[in-house]
Image (cartoon, rainbow, N blue to C red):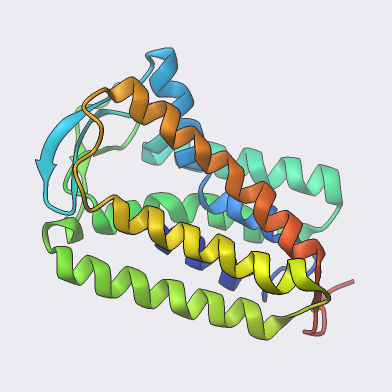
Length: 219
């Protein structure tokens, strides 16, 4: 799951209209933002493999992707957002987004998701075993999420109008490139994955150049 996570972030703008799209992106992808850092630190491991939709074997990633740590990261993100912004409803939304990453991964991954650090059980429903089903579902989610966002906001200038679509096009290009073989060097893969940190900042930039046209639910 890649653009499916971003789909939920786009759609969540309707539930948290005062929250930056950059924050929503960071929340939805928080586990994958931590993952390459933990890989480079040697805390988690990945190796080349043949797992259907993705040619990677996620050997160990308990600190970024286990069920328990997903709850911990979700609560921590929500508490930090509430302390910084004072918006309880939005804090709940970003916390749910953080946890949604594990839920979507549970649906798509083969059984490789740990329940907690140190545990031996691995879970996953394995949507990735069907490349066509994965593509159809994830692309449909992405289109729906973008539609929810662009109908909830309006561009003020060229940044809000065109740079948003450039970002979307780049996300799609990265997604399609994942269908090919990954780098054989897993450290290189980790460094490449760190570019994911670009998108919350890019999304925040675009969002600052768009007006929210939905009535805010709370003030």
